Length: 66
Image (cartoon, rainbow, N blue to C red):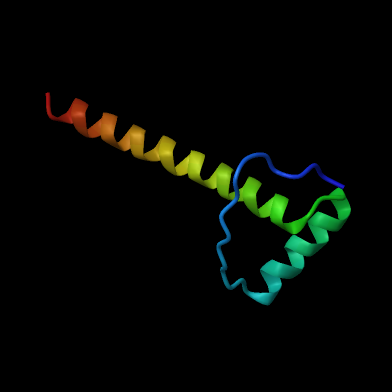
C-alpha cells in the first residue's frame, strides 16, 4: 500500500461520474495505491499545468505590451 501523505490534510468532498470513479478504482487497484493518493496526485499535476499556462499567458501578454 502507498505511504500516508505527510502534513495536515483537509477534507474535500467532490462528486465524480461513475465512469471516472470506476477508472480511478481500477488504477488504484493495479498500482496498489489508494484512490485518495491518486486523486491528490492528479490534482497536483493538474494545478501544475494550470500554473504553467497562467505564467505563459501572463508572459505573452507582457511581451505583447512592449
